[in-house]
Amino acid sequence: AVVDGLAATAQPAGACLLRCDWFVNEAHGEAIAMTVYRDEAALCSHLEQACHSYGCMAELCGQIEYEVFGKLGEAARRLLPVDNAVTLHFATGLSDARSLAECDCPAVGAIEIYTRFDIHPGMLELFKQLGAQLFQIVDDKDSGTLRYDWFYDEANLRCVVMDTYADTQGMFAHMRNAHDAHEKLLEHA
Image (cartoon, rainbow, N blue to C red; front, top):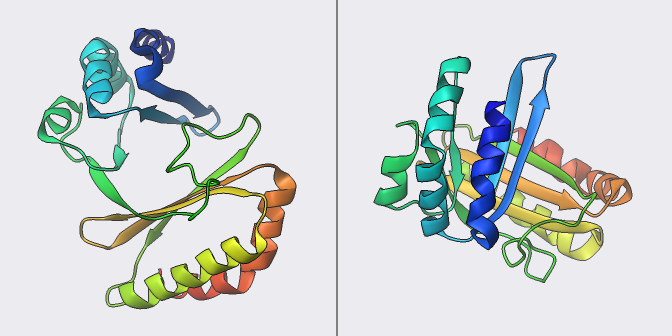
């Protein structure tokens, strides 16, 4: 019911709220909400309108974590319902039009994978070098990869990679093409 209320609150934002998706795993009692805003003003507007709903959600949940992908100004930071939001800054993405850094949302039916890496101390540069190799693989071999965006937190200890594939064939092709590079990457995170 609270999720329905948050979704209803998002409707008046119109084109300012580009995406409001909820994924629920009832067996484990967890949910992930993904909201994408046109700009910081849209984020602030939605947070102000949904203040009551977020308060109700906080009463129902044992833990709420926020990860913000992109720059977050003081006004939005003050409106977030938690004080400990992690901000991750865009580092790099696909160089052509397949990247969602330049698109509003993925294609209907696309497969999205969000991977969080906790980088071992002193391994950042090696991690980034392997990341560059992965981008080369995606550019050279992955025609089914629509998005491949990398974000790093301010301390450069966490990296979140957002992949979007056109379909399962595109996802499996990437997994095959990048298998060796993924194995090496996991040695550093």
